[in-house]
Image 1 (tube, rainbow, N blue to C red):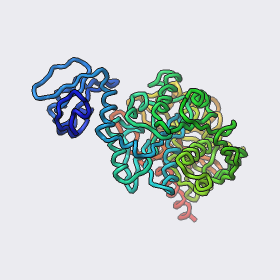
Image 2 (tube, helix red, strand yellow):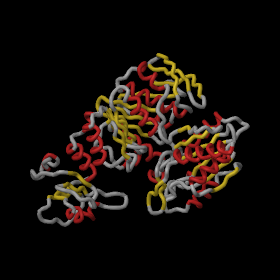
Image 3 (cartoon, rainbow, N blue to C red):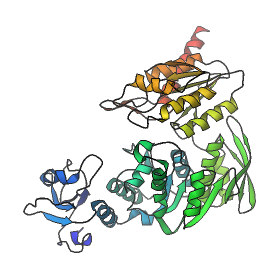
Image 4 (cartoon, helix red, strand yellow):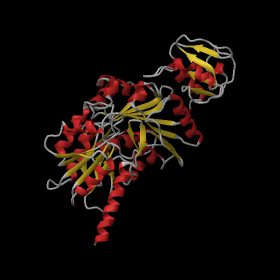
Length: 484
């Protein structure tokens, strides 16, 4: 593309790529001097030029070199978003873009939208779990990647034939304007609870970051908002675009009534525009039914009939590491879940209590991330203490903190339940499963299907809580059968 298509006053020279990382080899590229939380791209201009950049977009004063085009702007990030949309031909405008934001539920909603949407048309997914479209499966670097990788991804999806994309949008991604180059047809808000306050500072800043998604809705797009959440109710009143509410507790555009929740199945009546529909689904727990309402609303607002959607909800595919019921023939319940916030803990533990007899016990395995929101650690311990009879504290992405000290901080919130610290995560899961008796419930929390543990020097391989649990159960059952 000619540079003057991106910057009207620039010379008519050919550019092949837009880059923000000076370390990567580049050819005929435009380098944008972004200012991050740690690094400033202005410091790496020489490196970018050495690696092939021929155009430098900057806001601060720098020393110019011959044969390089320099473009000085007020805000480099804003210009990156504006020009990247042009350079990659705005793929989002040709796709039905569904963005999901909120503290909890993003992965379950976005991934399940993709699965159900594919019964009607072809839909891609991007989020914490993976990047998927057609037969392509990739591991993401972030829940919400930076501007250029995201637009490149959408362009690949469009070229592959996708008609829609269901995308998780994180608060940090929104705050850092990573999706400002994109317009969404549907924006979904799930909830806002205690998380990422180490980054945002307070709930108001956290809320305003989430709210940013709803300024990126296309002219004829809409918002879908959980009004059971206090921040969702506030957002619903503040959003000016076409909007739809969903709720279990209040009258809403999409409402679930008369819930009957069992260990493996839920029944309820879906009320849409004063019409009631009976629903049967393998989604369990009230918070997952809230997620399901968002899924139904987004599919309905994408043009699919309620009558065609509901039969597909009976046996939805399991979302990896999200409320994943593990069954390898054992006589007790095991659930692997990504819950890592106080609200997520409260909900998953309340569900565990609802399916566990008072004569049986709940055993929980979890930790808390290092270099992240320390205030929530004893809160997590307190919530687990309220529901569990046995708690096993273990490592969970300690980074350069001591996993033992993190566990001890969690334990400050434990007053009654028995608890032990087993730092090796595999051993901790194994001990929990070995302690379980018939009809007990074991909760293995926070990592889900993540295939790494972040320690002092970066990410190290981890098989995932789901795989570890299945492996241990299979081995245990096999040994018992051998003894018999």
